[in-house]
Length: 440
Image 1 (tube, rainbow, N blue to C red):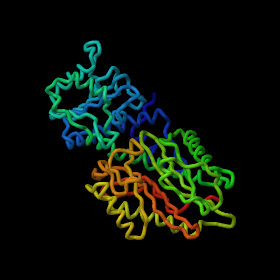
Image 2: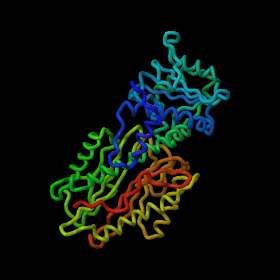
Image 3: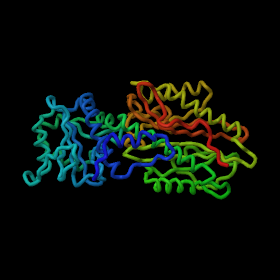
Image 4: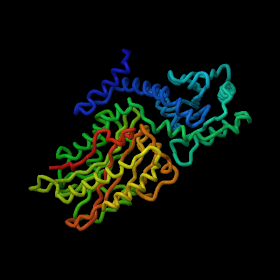
Protein backbone atom coordinates (compact mmCIF):
# COMPACT_ATOMS: atom_id res chain seq x y z
CA UNK A 1 0.00 0.00 0.00
CA UNK A 2 1.32 3.43 -0.86
CA UNK A 3 1.63 5.37 2.38
CA UNK A 4 -0.45 8.54 2.67
CA UNK A 5 1.21 11.03 4.96
CA UNK A 6 -0.59 12.63 7.89
CA UNK A 7 0.12 16.08 6.46
CA UNK A 8 -1.38 15.22 3.10
CA UNK A 9 -4.48 13.74 4.67
CA UNK A 10 -5.06 16.84 6.74
CA UNK A 11 -4.61 18.97 3.64
CA UNK A 12 -7.05 16.82 1.73
CA UNK A 13 -9.63 17.67 4.35
CA UNK A 14 -8.57 21.17 5.29
CA UNK A 15 -7.98 23.01 2.01
CA UNK A 16 -11.45 22.60 0.47
CA UNK A 17 -13.10 22.99 3.88
CA UNK A 18 -16.19 24.79 2.59
CA UNK A 19 -15.98 23.95 -1.09
CA UNK A 20 -19.14 22.60 -2.70
CA UNK A 21 -17.19 19.68 -4.15
CA UNK A 22 -15.89 18.41 -0.80
CA UNK A 23 -16.04 14.63 -0.65
CA UNK A 24 -15.22 12.15 2.11
CA UNK A 25 -11.87 10.39 2.01
CA UNK A 26 -11.61 6.82 0.68
CA UNK A 27 -11.97 4.23 3.44
CA UNK A 28 -8.28 3.29 3.49
CA UNK A 29 -7.25 6.91 3.97
CA UNK A 30 -9.89 7.37 6.65
CA UNK A 31 -8.40 4.47 8.57
CA UNK A 32 -4.91 5.97 8.44
CA UNK A 33 -6.18 9.31 9.65
CA UNK A 34 -8.29 7.83 12.47
CA UNK A 35 -5.28 5.97 13.84
CA UNK A 36 -2.97 8.98 13.56
CA UNK A 37 -5.45 11.23 15.34
CA UNK A 38 -5.90 8.66 18.11
CA UNK A 39 -2.13 8.46 18.53
CA UNK A 40 -1.88 12.23 18.73
CA UNK A 41 -4.75 12.43 21.24
CA UNK A 42 -3.05 9.88 23.49
CA UNK A 43 0.23 11.79 23.24
CA UNK A 44 -1.20 15.25 23.89
CA UNK A 45 -4.32 14.68 26.02
CA UNK A 46 -3.73 11.57 28.08
CA UNK A 47 -0.86 12.87 30.29
CA UNK A 48 -2.87 15.83 31.58
CA UNK A 49 -6.03 13.73 31.94
CA UNK A 50 -4.29 11.13 34.09
CA UNK A 51 -2.55 13.83 36.12
CA UNK A 52 -5.61 15.99 36.70
CA UNK A 53 -7.83 13.06 37.63
CA UNK A 54 -5.11 11.60 39.89
CA UNK A 55 -5.13 8.17 38.23
CA UNK A 56 -2.03 6.01 38.30
CA UNK A 57 -3.69 3.32 36.21
CA UNK A 58 -6.85 3.25 34.08
CA UNK A 59 -8.27 -0.15 33.14
CA UNK A 60 -10.86 -0.55 30.37
CA UNK A 61 -12.47 -3.95 29.85
CA UNK A 62 -14.82 -5.04 27.05
CA UNK A 63 -16.10 -8.14 25.39
CA UNK A 64 -16.93 -8.41 21.71
CA UNK A 65 -20.12 -6.52 20.71
CA UNK A 66 -20.57 -5.03 24.17
CA UNK A 67 -17.88 -2.39 24.00
CA UNK A 68 -17.18 0.20 26.64
CA UNK A 69 -17.85 3.57 24.90
CA UNK A 70 -14.41 4.88 25.86
CA UNK A 71 -12.57 1.72 24.88
CA UNK A 72 -14.25 1.84 21.48
CA UNK A 73 -12.61 5.21 20.78
CA UNK A 74 -9.20 3.64 21.47
CA UNK A 75 -9.56 0.64 19.16
CA UNK A 76 -7.67 0.64 15.86
CA UNK A 77 -9.62 1.94 12.88
CA UNK A 78 -9.85 -1.54 11.37
CA UNK A 79 -11.36 -3.00 14.53
CA UNK A 80 -15.10 -2.54 14.21
CA UNK A 81 -15.57 -4.14 17.62
CA UNK A 82 -13.50 -5.58 20.45
CA UNK A 83 -12.27 -9.15 20.01
CA UNK A 84 -13.18 -11.72 22.62
CA UNK A 85 -12.27 -9.94 25.87
CA UNK A 86 -10.12 -6.89 25.21
CA UNK A 87 -8.48 -5.15 28.17
CA UNK A 88 -6.67 -1.84 27.69
CA UNK A 89 -4.45 -0.46 30.46
CA UNK A 90 -3.17 3.11 30.61
CA UNK A 91 -0.42 3.82 33.15
CA UNK A 92 0.86 7.16 34.38
CA UNK A 93 4.44 6.23 35.26
CA UNK A 94 6.50 8.78 37.19
CA UNK A 95 9.69 8.00 35.28
CA UNK A 96 8.45 7.06 31.81
CA UNK A 97 5.21 9.02 31.50
CA UNK A 98 2.16 7.51 29.82
CA UNK A 99 2.42 3.81 28.96
CA UNK A 100 -0.35 1.94 27.14
CA UNK A 101 -0.89 -1.82 27.17
CA UNK A 102 -3.32 -4.36 25.75
CA UNK A 103 -4.04 -7.48 27.76
CA UNK A 104 -5.79 -9.16 24.86
CA UNK A 105 -5.63 -12.31 22.76
CA UNK A 106 -4.65 -10.26 19.69
CA UNK A 107 -2.36 -7.33 19.00
CA UNK A 108 -4.41 -4.13 19.41
CA UNK A 109 -2.97 -1.82 16.78
CA UNK A 110 0.39 -0.07 17.20
CA UNK A 111 -0.47 2.18 20.12
CA UNK A 112 -0.91 -0.51 22.79
CA UNK A 113 1.89 -2.87 23.77
CA UNK A 114 0.71 -6.49 23.72
CA UNK A 115 0.95 -7.71 27.31
CA UNK A 116 -0.51 -11.18 27.28
CA UNK A 117 1.10 -14.29 25.89
CA UNK A 118 -1.60 -16.90 26.18
CA UNK A 119 0.89 -19.74 25.84
CA UNK A 120 2.92 -18.49 28.79
CA UNK A 121 -0.07 -17.48 30.91
CA UNK A 122 -3.40 -19.08 29.93
CA UNK A 123 -5.39 -16.92 32.39
CA UNK A 124 -6.02 -13.42 31.04
CA UNK A 125 -6.91 -12.01 34.47
CA UNK A 126 -3.62 -13.19 35.94
CA UNK A 127 -1.80 -11.49 33.09
CA UNK A 128 -3.62 -8.30 34.04
CA UNK A 129 -2.76 -8.61 37.73
CA UNK A 130 0.89 -9.19 36.78
CA UNK A 131 0.84 -5.83 35.01
CA UNK A 132 -0.77 -4.24 38.05
CA UNK A 133 1.92 -5.76 40.28
CA UNK A 134 4.61 -4.35 38.01
CA UNK A 135 3.47 -0.74 38.53
CA UNK A 136 1.94 -0.95 42.04
CA UNK A 137 -0.58 1.85 41.32
CA UNK A 138 -2.04 3.84 44.22
CA UNK A 139 -5.23 4.54 42.27
CA UNK A 140 -6.85 2.28 39.68
CA UNK A 141 -9.66 3.78 37.64
CA UNK A 142 -12.62 1.77 36.35
CA UNK A 143 -15.34 3.08 34.06
CA UNK A 144 -18.30 3.43 36.40
CA UNK A 145 -20.56 6.48 36.41
CA UNK A 146 -24.03 7.42 37.63
CA UNK A 147 -24.54 10.42 35.37
CA UNK A 148 -22.78 9.58 32.07
CA UNK A 149 -23.56 6.36 30.23
CA UNK A 150 -20.39 7.00 28.19
CA UNK A 151 -18.29 6.64 31.37
CA UNK A 152 -20.19 3.62 32.73
CA UNK A 153 -18.89 0.98 30.37
CA UNK A 154 -17.72 -1.66 32.87
CA UNK A 155 -20.36 -4.41 32.74
CA UNK A 156 -21.35 -6.58 35.71
CA UNK A 157 -19.71 -9.83 34.60
CA UNK A 158 -16.36 -8.22 33.74
CA UNK A 159 -16.30 -6.41 37.07
CA UNK A 160 -17.14 -9.59 38.96
CA UNK A 161 -14.37 -11.53 37.21
CA UNK A 162 -11.88 -8.70 37.67
CA UNK A 163 -12.57 -8.41 41.40
CA UNK A 164 -12.38 -12.17 41.84
CA UNK A 165 -8.82 -12.23 40.47
CA UNK A 166 -7.60 -8.89 41.85
CA UNK A 167 -5.36 -9.25 44.92
CA UNK A 168 -7.03 -7.86 48.04
CA UNK A 169 -4.38 -5.20 48.60
CA UNK A 170 -5.51 -3.39 45.44
CA UNK A 171 -9.26 -3.42 46.06
CA UNK A 172 -9.16 -0.34 48.28
CA UNK A 173 -7.34 1.51 45.49
CA UNK A 174 -10.18 1.19 42.99
CA UNK A 175 -11.87 4.48 42.05
CA UNK A 176 -14.30 5.67 39.41
CA UNK A 177 -12.61 6.84 36.21
CA UNK A 178 -15.64 9.00 35.40
CA UNK A 179 -13.68 12.25 35.28
CA UNK A 180 -11.00 10.78 33.04
CA UNK A 181 -13.56 9.21 30.71
CA UNK A 182 -15.56 12.43 30.33
CA UNK A 183 -12.42 14.50 29.85
CA UNK A 184 -11.10 12.13 27.16
CA UNK A 185 -14.39 12.09 25.28
CA UNK A 186 -15.19 15.81 25.46
CA UNK A 187 -11.87 17.35 24.40
CA UNK A 188 -11.11 17.98 20.74
CA UNK A 189 -7.68 18.52 19.20
CA UNK A 190 -7.03 20.91 16.25
CA UNK A 191 -6.95 18.08 13.69
CA UNK A 192 -10.49 17.11 14.67
CA UNK A 193 -11.74 20.66 14.20
CA UNK A 194 -10.15 20.63 10.75
CA UNK A 195 -12.32 17.60 10.01
CA UNK A 196 -15.41 19.07 11.62
CA UNK A 197 -15.63 22.29 9.60
CA UNK A 198 -16.24 20.76 6.15
CA UNK A 199 -18.37 17.98 7.62
CA UNK A 200 -20.80 20.47 9.17
CA UNK A 201 -20.75 22.46 5.93
CA UNK A 202 -21.68 19.29 4.06
CA UNK A 203 -24.59 18.70 6.43
CA UNK A 204 -25.81 22.22 5.70
CA UNK A 205 -25.61 21.65 1.95
CA UNK A 206 -27.49 18.36 2.15
CA UNK A 207 -30.27 20.08 4.10
CA UNK A 208 -30.38 22.93 1.59
CA UNK A 209 -30.89 20.46 -1.25
CA UNK A 210 -33.48 18.49 0.72
CA UNK A 211 -35.40 21.71 1.34
CA UNK A 212 -35.56 22.70 -2.32
CA UNK A 213 -37.78 22.17 -5.35
CA UNK A 214 -35.34 19.47 -6.48
CA UNK A 215 -36.77 17.25 -3.75
CA UNK A 216 -40.08 18.79 -2.68
CA UNK A 217 -43.21 19.24 -4.82
CA UNK A 218 -45.94 20.87 -2.70
CA UNK A 219 -49.10 18.83 -2.58
CA UNK A 220 -47.21 15.65 -3.52
CA UNK A 221 -44.08 15.18 -1.41
CA UNK A 222 -44.50 14.00 2.17
CA UNK A 223 -42.31 14.67 5.17
CA UNK A 224 -41.32 10.99 5.17
CA UNK A 225 -40.30 11.27 1.52
CA UNK A 226 -37.78 13.93 2.52
CA UNK A 227 -36.54 11.85 5.46
CA UNK A 228 -35.79 8.88 3.22
CA UNK A 229 -34.24 11.12 0.58
CA UNK A 230 -31.83 12.29 3.29
CA UNK A 231 -30.98 8.72 4.24
CA UNK A 232 -30.35 7.74 0.61
CA UNK A 233 -28.27 10.84 -0.04
CA UNK A 234 -26.03 10.11 2.93
CA UNK A 235 -25.45 6.55 1.75
CA UNK A 236 -24.69 7.78 -1.78
CA UNK A 237 -22.06 10.12 -0.34
CA UNK A 238 -20.44 7.22 1.57
CA UNK A 239 -21.27 8.82 4.89
CA UNK A 240 -23.43 7.65 7.78
CA UNK A 241 -26.20 9.08 9.94
CA UNK A 242 -26.16 8.43 13.68
CA UNK A 243 -29.94 8.76 14.04
CA UNK A 244 -32.93 8.55 11.74
CA UNK A 245 -33.62 12.11 10.52
CA UNK A 246 -36.94 13.80 11.17
CA UNK A 247 -38.86 16.30 9.06
CA UNK A 248 -41.90 18.04 10.52
CA UNK A 249 -44.06 21.00 9.63
CA UNK A 250 -46.10 23.77 11.22
CA UNK A 251 -48.88 25.53 9.35
CA UNK A 252 -51.55 28.08 9.98
CA UNK A 253 -54.51 25.72 9.78
CA UNK A 254 -52.92 22.75 11.63
CA UNK A 255 -53.60 21.48 15.12
CA UNK A 256 -51.55 23.32 17.72
CA UNK A 257 -47.94 22.09 17.58
CA UNK A 258 -47.33 19.54 20.32
CA UNK A 259 -43.70 20.07 21.26
CA UNK A 260 -43.56 17.35 23.93
CA UNK A 261 -45.28 14.78 21.73
CA UNK A 262 -42.86 15.49 18.89
CA UNK A 263 -39.94 14.47 21.10
CA UNK A 264 -41.48 11.39 22.69
CA UNK A 265 -43.62 9.92 19.91
CA UNK A 266 -42.03 11.17 16.69
CA UNK A 267 -43.53 13.10 13.81
CA UNK A 268 -46.43 11.95 11.69
CA UNK A 269 -46.09 11.66 7.93
CA UNK A 270 -47.76 14.66 6.30
CA UNK A 271 -48.10 15.99 2.76
CA UNK A 272 -46.11 19.22 2.38
CA UNK A 273 -48.20 22.18 1.20
CA UNK A 274 -47.56 25.76 0.13
CA UNK A 275 -47.26 28.04 3.14
CA UNK A 276 -45.79 25.37 5.43
CA UNK A 277 -42.92 26.02 7.81
CA UNK A 278 -40.68 22.97 7.61
CA UNK A 279 -38.17 21.72 10.16
CA UNK A 280 -35.42 19.09 9.89
CA UNK A 281 -33.24 17.33 12.46
CA UNK A 282 -30.24 15.66 10.80
CA UNK A 283 -26.83 14.30 11.84
CA UNK A 284 -23.79 12.88 10.03
CA UNK A 285 -21.04 10.52 11.23
CA UNK A 286 -17.53 10.60 9.76
CA UNK A 287 -14.08 9.74 11.10
CA UNK A 288 -15.69 8.91 14.47
CA UNK A 289 -17.12 12.44 14.78
CA UNK A 290 -20.79 13.45 14.66
CA UNK A 291 -22.81 16.46 13.57
CA UNK A 292 -26.29 17.50 14.70
CA UNK A 293 -28.26 20.15 12.81
CA UNK A 294 -31.80 21.55 12.87
CA UNK A 295 -32.95 24.13 10.34
CA UNK A 296 -36.16 25.59 8.90
CA UNK A 297 -37.57 26.22 5.43
CA UNK A 298 -40.67 27.95 4.13
CA UNK A 299 -42.71 26.68 1.17
CA UNK A 300 -43.60 29.70 -0.95
CA UNK A 301 -47.20 30.22 -2.00
CA UNK A 302 -48.09 31.17 -5.54
CA UNK A 303 -47.06 34.78 -6.11
CA UNK A 304 -44.68 34.88 -3.11
CA UNK A 305 -40.99 35.58 -3.55
CA UNK A 306 -40.11 35.55 0.15
CA UNK A 307 -41.38 34.22 3.46
CA UNK A 308 -43.96 36.34 5.32
CA UNK A 309 -42.44 39.04 7.48
CA UNK A 310 -43.94 37.56 10.65
CA UNK A 311 -42.09 34.27 10.06
CA UNK A 312 -38.85 36.08 9.27
CA UNK A 313 -39.16 38.02 12.52
CA UNK A 314 -39.89 34.83 14.43
CA UNK A 315 -36.78 33.23 12.94
CA UNK A 316 -34.65 36.24 13.87
CA UNK A 317 -35.79 35.82 17.47
CA UNK A 318 -34.39 32.28 17.36
CA UNK A 319 -31.02 33.72 16.33
CA UNK A 320 -31.35 36.25 19.14
CA UNK A 321 -31.78 33.43 21.65
CA UNK A 322 -28.66 31.72 20.28
CA UNK A 323 -26.66 34.90 20.81
CA UNK A 324 -27.90 35.41 24.36
CA UNK A 325 -27.13 31.81 25.23
CA UNK A 326 -23.66 31.40 23.72
CA UNK A 327 -22.41 34.65 25.26
CA UNK A 328 -22.85 33.08 28.69
CA UNK A 329 -20.34 30.26 28.08
CA UNK A 330 -17.54 30.80 30.61
CA UNK A 331 -14.85 28.35 31.69
CA UNK A 332 -15.77 26.91 35.08
CA UNK A 333 -19.46 27.75 34.86
CA UNK A 334 -21.67 24.71 35.11
CA UNK A 335 -24.27 23.88 32.50
CA UNK A 336 -27.02 24.61 34.99
CA UNK A 337 -25.56 28.05 35.73
CA UNK A 338 -25.36 28.96 32.03
CA UNK A 339 -28.89 27.66 31.53
CA UNK A 340 -30.34 29.73 34.37
CA UNK A 341 -28.52 32.93 33.43
CA UNK A 342 -29.27 32.76 29.71
CA UNK A 343 -32.91 31.78 30.18
CA UNK A 344 -33.48 34.73 32.47
CA UNK A 345 -31.82 37.14 30.04
CA UNK A 346 -33.91 35.74 27.20
CA UNK A 347 -37.12 36.09 29.19
CA UNK A 348 -36.14 39.67 30.06
CA UNK A 349 -35.79 40.24 26.29
CA UNK A 350 -39.41 39.06 25.82
CA UNK A 351 -38.44 35.71 24.39
CA UNK A 352 -39.98 32.36 25.32
CA UNK A 353 -36.91 30.08 25.44
CA UNK A 354 -36.37 26.37 25.79
CA UNK A 355 -32.69 25.35 25.84
CA UNK A 356 -31.39 21.79 25.50
CA UNK A 357 -27.78 21.96 24.33
CA UNK A 358 -25.44 18.98 24.53
CA UNK A 359 -21.76 18.16 23.91
CA UNK A 360 -20.76 16.78 20.53
CA UNK A 361 -17.88 14.60 19.43
CA UNK A 362 -17.35 10.84 19.51
CA UNK A 363 -21.08 10.58 20.22
CA UNK A 364 -23.95 12.69 18.95
CA UNK A 365 -25.20 13.20 22.49
CA UNK A 366 -21.72 13.22 23.92
CA UNK A 367 -20.06 13.30 27.33
CA UNK A 368 -19.42 16.66 28.93
CA UNK A 369 -21.47 19.59 30.14
CA UNK A 370 -25.23 19.34 29.58
CA UNK A 371 -26.97 22.70 29.26
CA UNK A 372 -30.64 21.93 29.81
CA UNK A 373 -32.96 19.31 28.39
CA UNK A 374 -36.25 20.07 26.67
CA UNK A 375 -38.15 18.74 29.70
CA UNK A 376 -35.66 19.97 32.33
CA UNK A 377 -35.47 23.73 32.11
CA UNK A 378 -34.66 24.08 35.80
CA UNK A 379 -31.35 22.22 35.40
CA UNK A 380 -29.99 18.70 34.90
CA UNK A 381 -28.61 16.84 37.88
CA UNK A 382 -25.12 15.44 37.41
CA UNK A 383 -24.09 16.31 33.85
CA UNK A 384 -25.60 19.78 34.24
CA UNK A 385 -23.48 20.36 37.35
CA UNK A 386 -20.32 19.66 35.36
CA UNK A 387 -18.24 22.78 34.53
CA UNK A 388 -17.42 24.00 31.03
CA UNK A 389 -13.94 23.44 29.64
CA UNK A 390 -12.36 24.95 26.54
CA UNK A 391 -11.59 22.94 23.42
CA UNK A 392 -14.98 21.26 23.55
CA UNK A 393 -17.71 21.05 20.90
CA UNK A 394 -21.45 21.53 21.38
CA UNK A 395 -24.66 21.20 19.50
CA UNK A 396 -26.29 24.55 20.27
CA UNK A 397 -29.83 23.21 20.44
CA UNK A 398 -32.78 25.33 21.55
CA UNK A 399 -36.10 26.80 20.49
CA UNK A 400 -38.07 29.98 20.93
CA UNK A 401 -41.86 30.00 20.96
CA UNK A 402 -43.58 32.85 19.14
CA UNK A 403 -47.28 33.65 18.89
CA UNK A 404 -48.21 34.31 15.25
CA UNK A 405 -51.51 36.26 15.12
CA UNK A 406 -51.85 35.60 11.39
CA UNK A 407 -51.82 31.85 12.12
CA UNK A 408 -53.78 32.23 15.37
CA UNK A 409 -51.30 29.95 17.12
CA UNK A 410 -47.88 29.61 18.63
CA UNK A 411 -44.98 28.26 16.57
CA UNK A 412 -41.55 27.20 17.70
CA UNK A 413 -38.37 28.12 15.89
CA UNK A 414 -36.24 25.07 16.63
CA UNK A 415 -32.56 25.59 15.84
CA UNK A 416 -29.50 23.42 16.27
CA UNK A 417 -26.04 24.34 15.04
CA UNK A 418 -22.65 22.81 15.80
CA UNK A 419 -20.12 25.02 17.54
CA UNK A 420 -16.74 25.00 19.26
CA UNK A 421 -15.87 26.58 22.61
CA UNK A 422 -12.29 27.79 23.00
CA UNK A 423 -10.54 30.69 24.72
CA UNK A 424 -12.12 33.11 22.21
CA UNK A 425 -15.65 31.99 23.13
CA UNK A 426 -18.25 30.04 21.15
CA UNK A 427 -18.05 30.03 17.36
CA UNK A 428 -19.98 28.01 14.79
CA UNK A 429 -18.03 25.35 12.92
CA UNK A 430 -19.62 26.31 9.61
CA UNK A 431 -21.74 29.34 10.38
CA UNK A 432 -25.42 29.10 11.29
CA UNK A 433 -28.74 29.50 9.54
CA UNK A 434 -29.78 33.16 9.66
CA UNK A 435 -32.54 33.14 7.05
CA UNK A 436 -35.29 30.70 6.22
CA UNK A 437 -34.58 28.39 3.31
CA UNK A 438 -37.14 29.00 0.58
CA UNK A 439 -38.83 26.27 -1.45
CA UNK A 440 -40.23 27.58 -4.73
